[in-house]
Image 1 (tube, one colour):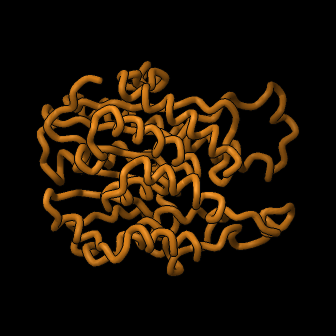
Image 2: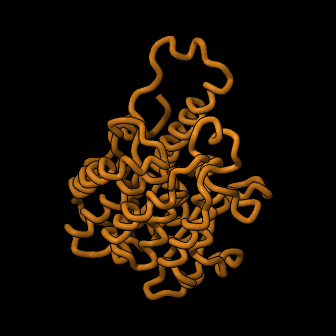
Amino acid sequence: MEPFRQNVALAIDGGGIRGTMVAKALAVVEENVGKQCNEIFHLLAGTSTGSILSATIAAGLSAAEIHGLYEDQGPNIFKKSWRCLFPFKYLVHYIYPSDYFQAVLQEHLGEMTMGDLWAAEPQLDVVITARDLVLNKTIFIKPWKDDFKDWKLWRAVLCSSSAPTQMPVVEGRYVDGGVGSYANPCYMAAYEAKFCLEWPLEETTLISLGTGRYPGGLEPYQADHFNAFDWVFPVIDTFSSDACVQQVRLVKTVFPELDFRRFEMDLPYPIPMDDTSSIAALTDLGEELGHKILNDLVDEEVYADAGTPP
């Protein structure tokens, strides 16, 4: 692995249970580097499952411990019930109650506040995205902002991870940070490094980790007979995948001095965010992703035309 620069940041995409893959990849890195992630990275940015990973790293958990949480608690958080059955899953306000998820977050993050991270030694910047439905904008929950310094870390993660239809809206206003353009928070992390922390980009490395790219697309003529409902998921997937690539292009274009490394895996089959039956497969993919990081095998699919649209 090419040595990191003086300042090192980590940005992790959203993706629900697919965070299992990233946790395993980081465990591989920790094992080979001989340091925990909280000793390597001093800026962590995460959306949804990326916020879970960022917060638990900041709280001092090893990547192996975090991977264990995904394995052990994932099936309990995404516990199947009548709400998951057709047609109920399209009629209820949410599929999975968040009580158990909140309890897990509180157990492992305790009463730590965002401000505690900023007051720590060494100082740690953790940026968590959420969507505020009342203000109708994406918010960036940061430890040095007065508005957020008293927020419990678990509360920030809960807000960032509450995907619409999957979990209930938090406090009547906050939902998943991936509802918008920041499911991939790499541009946000680069901006934070340069303009908020004032890190010289020539001395900064940013590692960006995806949670798996869906294989293929529709079959020819498959969309010819789509009704309005059939279009929902292809449109959402198109928006999210294009937004993810656009974030990478922005980083490469706006911050060319940055040592930016994007790593991603192609999934062997579509893995929904709540598919806990794929945890073993995601763990295997994580092992492969970890070795990609160690061998600097960056994601060539988005690097090929990262400067401007083709």
